[in-house]
Image 1 (spheres, each protein chain N blue to C red):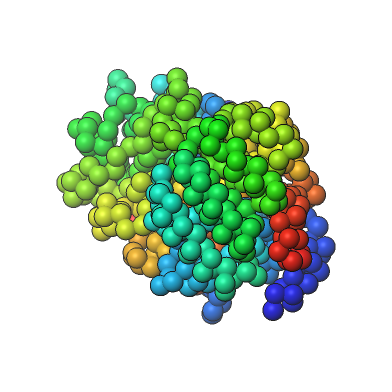
Image 2: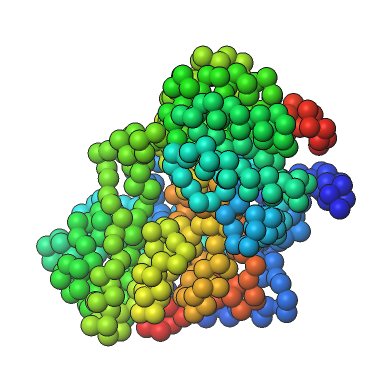
Length: 288
Length: 306
Ligand SMILES: [Zn+2]
């Protein structure tokens, strides 16, 4: 058995000279719910331009990607950042590959008009929020007002709980992960609010976490970029079969291939796989 | 320009093309989950420098069975395994012996897929040397795992490194740099401390576990001048740039794929190597050949041919 395996491997390594660099198309749609344009301030990127990012994603079978911009984390000209993001997404290919997710900072003066423009001028499908970099927590009443405003306008809301491992941040550029627990009280009070949490890490996605089960019950969406563990996706779905878990990569901050391989590592039924690859993402935007 | 963009984005929102694309029906049974269909991936033949058998299962061997089943899905052929749960930061001799007993139980049934590393706590120097004899000199294990029980630049490690070199047993020392060192556990080592240890033992190969973790750019620098130290890439987030920097600064021959399962996935750690901007030859070194080379002397002693 062992020898047969070894021989089989030796024979096929030679037959795969590109070492998985280019591959046949995957079955069906694949929606990446967590990519960003631009460069993270403390890292180089493998995707210098939106076109390079799109090219790599397409090469691996991604059919659409929900894009924020790293600029949204630190810049305060939010309206300008959102307009640039929207324009950059429109320029790529036929304008249908990247879906722009603009940001709002509810601590900035007249943020309400930024929200209005996201909806009425840019026609964005949703927002991506960075509470730990923008200076508020999820029990802040200004966040509640923003969430209600987004719900009224039918905007889907992504909340990034972290952007990088807080143990290895540059000491002059730190942000603690966002605590998602206040959503449990807030969501029932905001009818129509639709929320996805990005980059939850094992703090939320860890096995047997009671907060995860409660958030899932409240209808929150999650994505896979920071989901870890052996066969992480199937292990999580074994415990929470109804979890709204969508595919996400946090590219280009992460290597995109890390996310893609998670789909292969987990033994999933065709229905589970379709839900993660595109089903939950589509439903999230369709329920507007 | 502005108006054109406005029109383009307006049209995009109006037509909602992302909803419109219908999924192709999935065939019955297991389907290839990604563009990397299982067939090609399963033949990768990677050797994993860093694995823990903490997966579900009633016995250590059953836990390994589960781990192997998943490893097969992503082309991991062999794993260096060590430290059976529960984790103890500063284990007593009794605790590390119990942990090693679990690994020995795994090896009884899975020697075709696993290499055992003996878990020691150098604070208990005599007991660690005795355990090294039991598990490596007189047992089936081929390496040593040191975790967070004792700063690795301390003199207690010297007799262990000497004996390890006599036995051709490679040492994998956990390292991490949390909040630039301020957030480390009381006895947790850094790559800088491993470089100090290496300087006292020139010529003895060592593996820098995690290479400093998330602050790998510091870890890689810290071990750069010690050519005996190899960088284990595993255990951190798959942040772009680590693999490329390690190869640039250390050379591909000093870089190892390790996953740190079961806490991590195989996927995120393999993905960073497969996705890196490197040649195929460099990726092969990292995924397999470097670890084969490092383990070969110990495997030869045990009569294991690869
Ligand atoms: Zn480990």
